[in-house]
Image 1 (cartoon, rainbow, N blue to C red):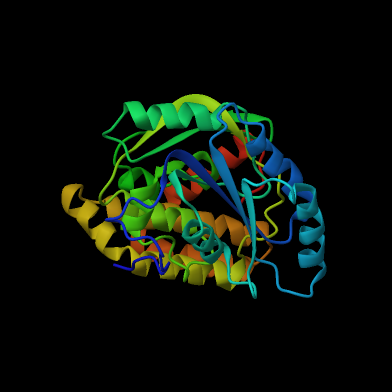
Image 2: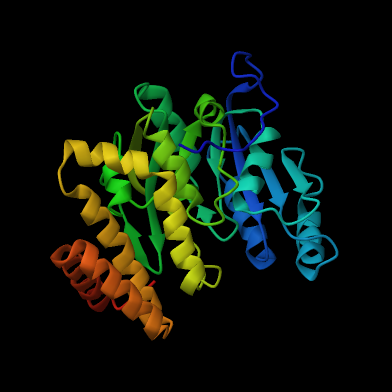
Length: 316
């Protein structure tokens, strides 16, 4: 089982945080045009005991770094905002860990730079965690592409996550501080699926609840930073190697779930290859998984195609 690679300056046994303070960590890379609105969505919260930590993960001496620094000038007189520049591009996981290492909040939020908090998000989630001691994190509904997505699941959600029924959207979640310390932060070896990775480790120990309201607007990015082709296949292989033990535990409890998990993930890879016109790669994925998982894989491919046609979304 892999663990996060973040190195934390706070000892979990020491109370080196401020009660009631919420630390909102915003990693930013290549999307400076969204950053001001993102930060202002936190400034405009109904809950005002907040610090904002912006971690610039752009490479130095690039236009993206220059543009981000210029945007941050607007907030130079805000004492509650900290701006940190990475010495080189590390990745989103590392930027989140950097932000946490410089935070002092009792509660932690990670906000993507193209997302927006609705004005009562922090207030509602702080209230939930203070009144529901059996949960160590809380998430909320969000709106994306003019579609509202309400939360359904709560508790220990390893099965739902691995089956892609529960999709962890990092910006919707608020964590208790000690939870992030216990997990060791984000695993910086994951350049994608960081949210899935940390939440699978989270669910080994903790439970998540939800506020059944739309409290986040998720940016309309075009998916340009998504992995494609061989890189996508390599990511899936790395993901499954990392969480083989988790999947095996589920298989012992529920016979056949392993085949369903693999089929569901690789059906997405198959349709991604079709969408990107990597037809030979798609054929290879189809044949290999048909041999391994037979009718289960066909069923998952068909189910995803139906979902795509109904929603008329781009297959990813």
